[in-house]
Length: 190
Image (cartoon, rainbow, N blue to C red; front, top):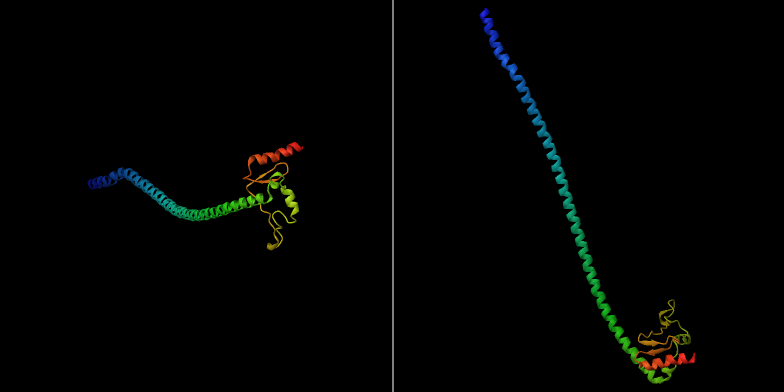
C-alpha cells in the first residue's frame, strides 16, 4: 500500500508539478496576448478615428471644390458682363467722339461765318462772355426746373481763345498776331 501511495503521489506530482511550473509561463503568455489584444483594439480605434477624419476631410474638399467652381463661374459671368459693357462703352465713346468732331466742325464753320459777317470789329473789340451772358435773360445751362421746351442753352465753344483781361472770345483759327494785338491794346490802355 505504501508503494501504491508513493506511486500515486509521484504521479500526482508529475501532473501538478510541471503544471505549477507552466502556470507562470502561461500567465505571461496570457498577459502578452491581452496586451497585444489591447494594442490591436487601440490601433483599430485609431484607424477608425483616422478613417472618419479622412472621410470628413474628403467631404470638405468636395465642398470647397464646389464653392471654388461656383466662384469661378460667377467671376466668369462678371468678366463676360464687364467685357460686354466695355464693348458697349467703346461703341458709345466712338459715337460720341464722332458727334464731337461734327460739332467742332460746325462750330468752326459758324465762327468763320460770324467773323466774316462782323468783319474786324469782332476781332478788335470782342464782346466778353460775361456781357453776352448778361444780355441773355436765360441761364447759362438752362433752368433745371423749367419744362424742356423752356430751356435755353448757350453753346460752349470748345475751339476758342479767351482774352484773360476782358474775357473776349476769339476763334482758334484767328492768327496769333491778331490775338496778341488785342492783348497789347489792354496793356497800352492801362
